[in-house]
Length: 286
Length: 153
Ligand SMILES: Cc1cc2nc3c(=O)[nH]c(=O)nc-3n(C[C@H](O)[C@H](O)[C@H](O)COP(=O)(O)OP(=O)(O)OC[C@H]3O[C@@H](n4cnc5c(N)ncnc54)[C@H](O)[C@@H]3O)c2cc1C
Ligand code: FES
Ligand code: FES
Image (cartoon, rainbow over all chains, first blue to last red; front, side, top):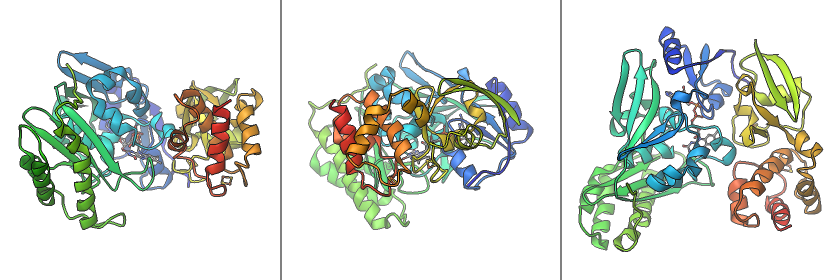
């Protein structure tokens, strides 16, 4: 199908894009990679009056390392992050997850910021941001604000972004930690039926499940049951039991709630069982 | 209407386009390059795959206005330059096409695979790279045979 008619401008700066949004917040949409927005327009699920193209803004580009923080521009494409040496070294979880996001011809245009702002419940990157304890950097008419990933994803396709705000970048603390990723999808590159992005430092485990409910979420009770200190099979079994209290009962045509819970437990074991062996290290090095 | 200037298969093209026109329709209807096919128009079938600034993209998910000041290569371009010749011969030899609807997108995606893959004969890597390209005729095995055959040359 063809999209309805709209007007288009290429923004010259973030300030210009914000001014355009502020002038008509509900009739205007930001266009980044277009890999979620353009399908929605072609399917006529959405019909904005104006698209503001932010794809070429230098303010949204690039990866920078300052001290123990990795800052990733919202405009970085999936493909660029898959091959970036800074990501491979300091946040390999991102690249591991991106291999499951869509297909090469979509990853070449789709952006990190677009994926996070879109907040698809089955998308990989929101869960990765929860697992990495990321902070979102957001700009709007009243200035810049920082918001934790745990407060950013508020519901199905809903985030803490106001209609006149732009996600500029995100910051990830560099820590010595293990990380792992697994998902189950019907075909390679499809959205997941259930997935898990996990990290473990000396004193905290973050288990971020996606496609298990309206938004990616941390499984707090399962992480609590895992505890800290050396991992063993009993603690992993306890975490699997506790997982029933974390995941909402979510039935859809892909899977029933009980099948999802079963698969979530399979993924939890698959990702963290190798961590029992202390010689296996997947650290993020400072 | 918006003015755009872009390079398509080595030729500089100037045009005026409505913002909602996607690149696939622009290529087919305004440039007469009908080798780029449209199956789904929402990114899932891969029939419209082309190259933009050297990277493969879905031309149904790029607006013609977004392609201002870019370099576009279509199946016609890689055919005329000879870049796709070995693959096209292998597709014919292996019966890797029947109706041919998916073929231009398959060939462009396969060229990208052959240019970037560490092991161009790795069948599971070929499958993963082609995962976003649907074929309703061949059952894929022959397509993978053809790509692996060229990868081994
Ligand atoms: C066939 C297909 C399969 C896919 N499979 C997957 C998959 O398995 N997993 C997955 O995670 N994704 C998948 N995707 C989606 C893909 O990852 C998209 O690239 C991504 O969701 C959106 O990024 P984008 O840059 O294309 O954003 P756009 O489509 O340009 O924008 C998406 C939304 O975010 C808003 N937006 C964009 N950038 C910003 C910003 N900086 N600040 C504020 N708002 C912004 C836009 O206004 C719009 O509402 C798939 C897409 C297709 C077409
Ligand atoms: S027509 Fe573009 S992916 Fe199907
Ligand atoms: S040959 Fe007919 S769709 Fe592939």
